[in-house]
Length: 173
Image (tube, rainbow, N blue to C red; front, side, top):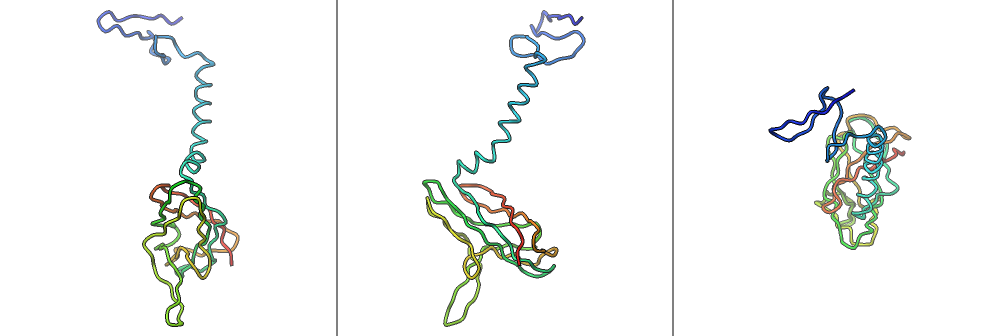
């Protein structure tokens, strides 16, 4: 049987055998309360990503990346939905499978079509913004490996208000 000794000089309570945690007030965790507390903590933590996306109002839909060979370039396309009441700014993209990632736009000038890097894209409040072939996209340069149709890859999108959003994109031809 465990006995409790009170230290006269400090007033703290400890088990003589050193085991068990104590709640405020000196009562030990019951065998039922501790597992219940762990279960509640895990349940709440598992909801955090969904709450974060809902709180910021940024959602990414229909993400895909073009198939390409090692060392070549590809592009990522997706739709950003901003359901919040404030605009947000996409300012950076990262992909672990690419040497460099940049936000790009396709433009036409003097009858010539070209692409250029852009610093950021503002997504107005309560709107959607599409990254699609022949328009805005994330350019993925110097691929570190082959991207084969059907596989899935992760992209990180960086928003000023919404923080970092990781997107799973399917590779297509």
